Image 1: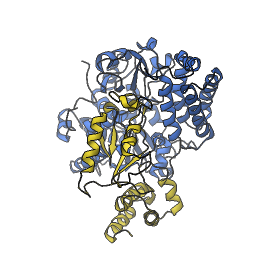
Image 2: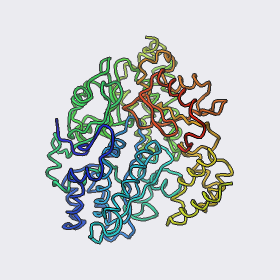
Image 3: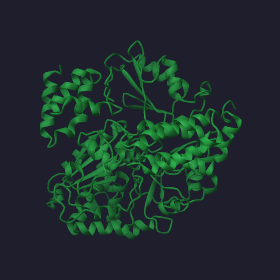
Image 4: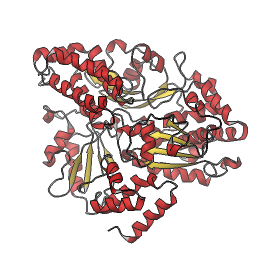
Length: 421
Length: 173
């Protein structure tokens, strides 16, 4: 078994306590950093570690931080993103529920590196038990002098609050999340850069909670150790892979970055439930459908990019031979069309139209021209205001590239070949 | 009207916040808990507490999935129709046509998505993926997750909920 880092304190029935987290080395990094390190040294260590954002985009965390100008005004904010509303994605819930202090420590470290004063953890409504857990543990951390004023006697003040969302997928997008916290209708806002003008017009860093959870380990064990966790060249760290769908053991698995997809599905997740493997979404609902020929890909950012895919959130959704991928895409595009914030036309008008075409194909009422039009529309989604629409089109692009035969079969038979079996 | 005690508590929370608008969702949830949904009266009271116009708050209220601008039943069922729950329908032979637990649930309750059963017990609301993919197919009932659901276990859950004493569960999310 490979080394568990983020899930080392996972228990079947309850979260790790503060004492248990401490016993596993928790808060040692915070004491070390506050006692010995300058904020910029912390950013350098994170840069050196090669940590990339685990929320989907995979942007280098240290680089994101380095956009914050040295003379940026105060207060500055950290927003740990726990919105996680993409179909197939549930790793953050597992992470919070197994070891909340790991995220709290990671958030304080991010706060120190960026000399921020406050963090606001943004959490989705269906994670209410996790929200309550966080609030309980914030107060434990305050009682122990780990959070709040003068942390561990260092003179550094930093506190964390919780923002409960009322639930919309677009809130996961960083700038929409900022608007949501500000009590405005959440939509992406690309006017300025978040590190200059984010929450309440102040410098703001939005990081996924899995990204933040890596920080205590990087700072305690060093950037080289973190790099060494990966099994692929150029990769760094472990990754939480939420495996769901038609596998025998759907669950969240922590494995080295670069673990082959085939190994994750067929060894760790117990293989297929029944029918043979047909396809998967390798990194969540906004990644491209991947065909069996690519099963040996290493699950890291670079290897997936090299074959035209994305690691995304590492949420692997597995379909077996009995699944109609046209209906699967219809389901996915229905989700995205409904969740579009409606701000820009390609997304607002394009996704319902893509849905319409997929439905026609699924019902056997389409000709080959519909398939071509679907492809044109999917490409046109790149012209939208934010990444939502291209993400929504991704599974469909995978369908067109890798499973065109299945689309043609629907057209030729005038019905769904998977119905009535 | 909101009870004086609740109103005072909310006023205190809003005042304690550097940016009152940051409390918009929390206040809507609290008012929703009181009325059972975010009524017109509740929306007006919430807006006034936050120093926002009713229109501004309406813009938020109607955007979010977990704010209910219409009355809901005692139990709000967010049954997941995300792609994972959609495909994990082992044993759902009755669903050959639509292959969705939403369809099954609506048929059992005799409602359509968005509607409340005539006895005021259950409301089925459209739901994005609820984040319990390893327990697919899954649903949330007033915020509590259930899964993996089979037709039998879903029927059992509905029976148990029907037999809950009144006032047993809150109606927030």
